[in-house]
Length: 385
Image (cartoon, rainbow, N blue to C red):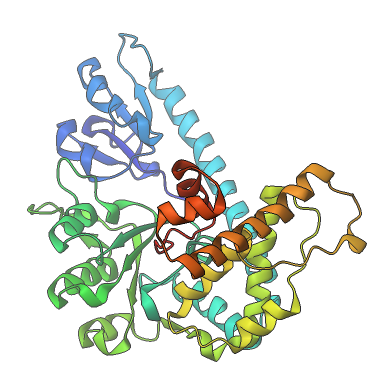
């Protein structure tokens, strides 16, 4: 694993085996990357370098004048430290690779073949410099991205303007470029992006070099880029030529209904671990519903349903006969009463509409309590994000 090392030009020969980026003036280079190590020989440069310490950068001062809050050492000690750091980073890379393989082995085995294949394809193709993923409804859930991609950054063209996105991606003196970072840059909703912008990013990723925004300087492109589209028809021909076969389509829910119960259980189990629920069994009624539903909102609608299950908005069967450790009566009663309370409020809304004054009257609660309950149970009429 390469150490992103920034060092004075006079140190080039001594540190050559670490492939450092060299500078004459620290300001010219410091903003071009998220550096692992910045070496300074002039104490006056320490203040500028310390601005990067919040990114986890190690600042090394090699001058004869010690400086607080940085590592002060001689050149011989610096070389030994860099060799040690290289070994640590290499071992970390091996461990990350093993952990990723374990996740990929565990998760697809729970799913039916079609969805399992999507997992494997996304993992394989995202290793390319540039790749494409097609997912309807503009959705790649974080649980999919984090488990398969590992280290990634997201830029959403459905939220920010192209100009702002380009500033983040290519960087300026005040915006460290995302293209300089190791890992994957996920560009969401590229359907809303111009072909010119897509071409500029794809070219930089495929060539492994880019120019910071409004600059003629050349920098190494360390990021792999994953372009997300909702509709395959919106993918420019130029991008298809650059990407080649490195593209995958996440199927719409109607095509993978058999995998939905396993995905739902996976989601609920994660929530259950965080909430210390001993055993939560999804009722057969819920399983039948998710298989038969059309899910016109595609993945987003399905995951909203998963969230409603997780917070108790939908019926979950608590199998007490299989619980090895009996939950506290107070905690269990609270879970059951919360479900009943939600159903009561829901029924009141069906009869009296959203007239809060009337709802407060029939439920015998004050306005503040009503508002809090509506928000808690997702009955406030606002769409869940």
